[in-house]
Amino acid sequence: MQKLFLLIVFSFFTTIISADDSIQSLQRSLNKAIKANDTAAIVDAYKYLGDYLCEISDFDKSNFYLQKGLTLASKAKIFREVGVLCNLLATNASYEGKRELALSYYHRALRAFSEINNLDKIALTMMNMGSEYESMGNYKLAIAYTLKAIKNKELSGVKKNLAYYYQHLGQLFKETDKSKWKFYVDKAYNIAKNSDEERISTRIAIFNDLGGIAERENNYKEAYAWYDSMIIKSKANDYDIGLATAYSNRSHIYKLEKKYENALKDVLNAMDYAYKLDRNFLKITEHTNAANLLIEMNRISEAQIHATKALELASS
Image 1 (cartoon, one colour):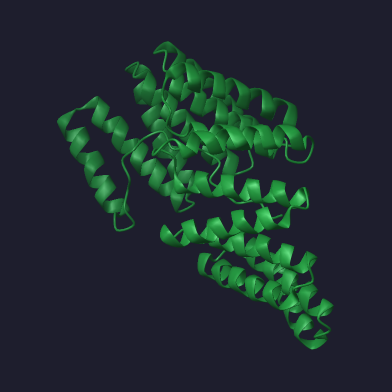
Image 2 (image 1 turned 60 degrees about the vertical axis):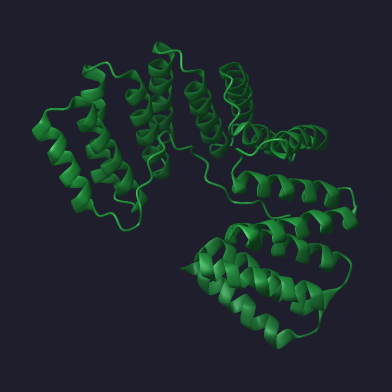
């Protein structure tokens, strides 16, 4: 079963920078704040500029502005912004493969949020730390920090994104303890079902997990139902990664049941979305899936085309 690829690191502020915003406009905001000698506005400007530069993978410049914001926020004892900036710097460090540096920023963020007793932000930071440890292959600490995150999240009284916390915790048990995986995913499902604050990515991830659990239990009828629900809800919300994942996973069940034509149709649909999203890993996966299916169907020359394309993409 293909895992749904979600953003690991939570955002710590709500202002969204549109694709049309430029570095120049952000720089103008910074200059305006500096001219007004408004410390809070200057910190904000450094933060948004650094975050924008991270989004376009200019990590050196991003770190430069985030560090300037962090220095100013620390001096002014604006603890919430210290925590936010440390999380952003941790994100950059993680993208650059500097795991220990990322964790040091997360610990600093925890101290900052503790100063103002912001349990919701403490929970968010601990979730990010859990994800960092997961990326390092340390599942013991990943689970420990995710459990701490859930405890703080519930104590905070902020319900938004709570279902994601439980869904992610379930994922950590996916390969080692199916009963715990199912327990936490069911809990996430019930929270999301009774909430209008969960993101579409969380709802789709929950459906995906429930489909995967049913598949492992050889309950293909139920698995089809969950993957069909993923497709319907993803289409309704223009959520392409959900569609790519659902088609890919449903094709696997079709293949298990030797319904090869249906399986191939779904693989090709998944491939279309992989190209639309321009994600090489997904492209490689679906070309490989197509090659394997076509071999089963004794369409060897077509299989070779997909296998060759997968190899080209992997090599690049």
